[in-house]
Amino acid sequence: MESKERRVGTVSRGIRCPIFREGDDLAALVVDSVLGAAESDGFAIRDRDVISITESVVARVQGNYASVDDIAADVRAKLGGETVGVIFPILSRNRFAICLRGIAKGCRKVVLMLSYPSDEVGNELVSLDKLDEAGINPYSDVLSLERYRELFGYGVHEFTGVDYVQYYGDLIRECGAEVEIVFANQAKAILDYTDCIINCDIHTRARTKRILKAAGARIVCGLDEIMNAPINGSGCNEQYGLLGSNKATEETVKLFPRECQDLVMDIQARMLERTGKCVEVMVYGDGAFKDPKGKIWELADPVVSPAHTPGLVGTPNELKLKYLADNEFASLSGEELKEAISASIRAKDSDLVGKMASEGTTPRQLTDLIGSLCDLTSGSGDKGTPVVLVQGYFDNYTN
Image 1 (spheres, one colour):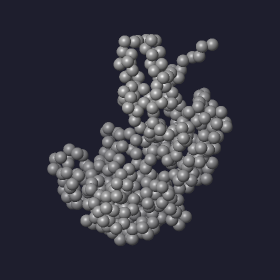
Image 2 (cartoon, one colour):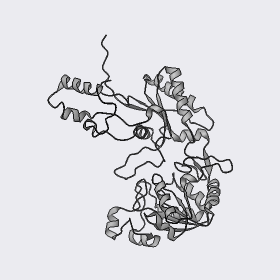
Image 3 (tube, rainbow, N blue to C red):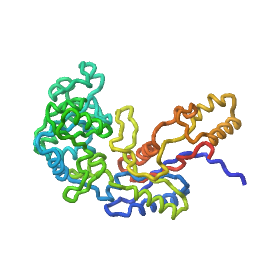
Image 4 (cartoon, helix red, strand yellow):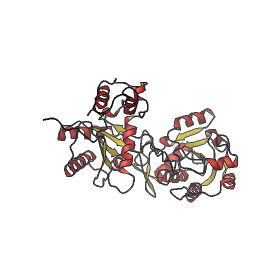
């Protein structure tokens, strides 16, 4: 009997799961949840399906938490407890406020240096148009808080309604530290105020550290070097420290998950045992996509995927169907066109980098692409789907 042609390509499903708690057998619960969803919704598991687990539940099951006092103790030990420059933080109550509370409790004075007109992930303090009107060059000009207010007044974030300049300043004072706020985009500008610095940028942190050390900073400590070892029995992240952390309570943060390669390999093995299918598995955090309205890039985690099975290494190797249809097979149509394109796909090179027929395909790592899809699917609120099953991602027109 002739096989029926498949009419559906990639499908992304949010998988509803129980509320995970510290110490749970996460691998067993994830496998049970995926297979339970497959049974209830009547779909089959296939080879190269991708099971993705949000980093949040991995860290929760690991019990990877730290308190404000833990952060303060680490900051005091590493920076000396006097005047500390805190530079290039992102503007986020969830992502940075509790970290800042701990930093402030660990020193006498904080010189907070904010990048402008926006933070690293796109949260805007002031528009480029307003900078132009004021004649300000953000690449060279250093603004005091007074000058900033004189020029731009008191603005709130479009989506959160928060004046982060006021919010961060108040938070530092509430923790018992003095605060001075400046605005600059050159890391070296902080050296006019202090030579002990915590650089809070995420993806540019290595360059910032290099520039500061070369300019004579006495102590430079990235957020990745705060809470990179346990303090009084706390959690930690040896590789990323406070990077990727989220607010848990008013006094604690949930850190980015610790080593979790064993988890993804365990889930892959259990799925093979239960279904006979070899699926891929990954842990994912923030995706990488820009909001054209709010201009936010997302991507507040140090990596999209801290752990994944080997089959997710690499980038897509795809032909651009529009290119083939409009160029090589412009004279064909209907079934003849379909067969010609299918033949091209079946015969494509194993590495299409630089080939015209792949021009316009998305040049990103597979984990970044799939992680972004999963982040959008699971959402960050009350959907209750911290596991996402992606099917058909590695299919092409011929499958």
